[in-house]
Image 1 (cartoon, one colour):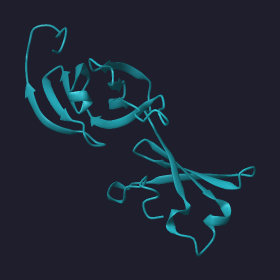
Image 2: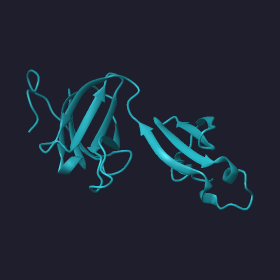
Image 3: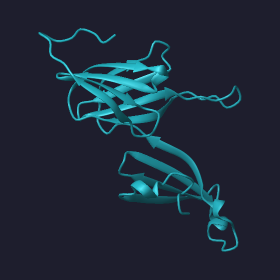
Image 4: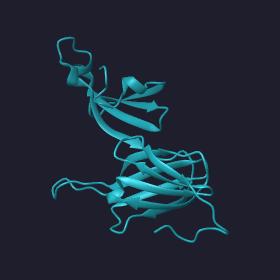
Length: 171
């Protein structure tokens, strides 16, 4: 149960809230775990296996991870192919998404959350690079490049700029 199927991250563990319910028809118990980083994990187990002391550690299965924004989206941009999207909210959340992938038998619709960019200023323009692996952000005073290949993006470089008026685009 230590990492709960990979959902729990001990190195960044702050606080988790849990709720559970029993599905009488299937005989399974479901737990919803809410991490304060914006993720909700859905874990299920057969009730008989869950309380069996001789069962292995894989009796609790991570079915899904739900995540998204905690406020309404104000802007979004996509890369030229449309396979990567970055969305922003009024409360300074910036998330990079990718279209869900799968082979023909398991393909599904939707977006997978790729990375969260920790911004602290109002962003004017956004540009996705290299299939969403990198993002360029332009605010009122600087241009910044972010590496979005992990859950939390890291700032690679930023450069101050000044110009008369508002920039129209970011190429």
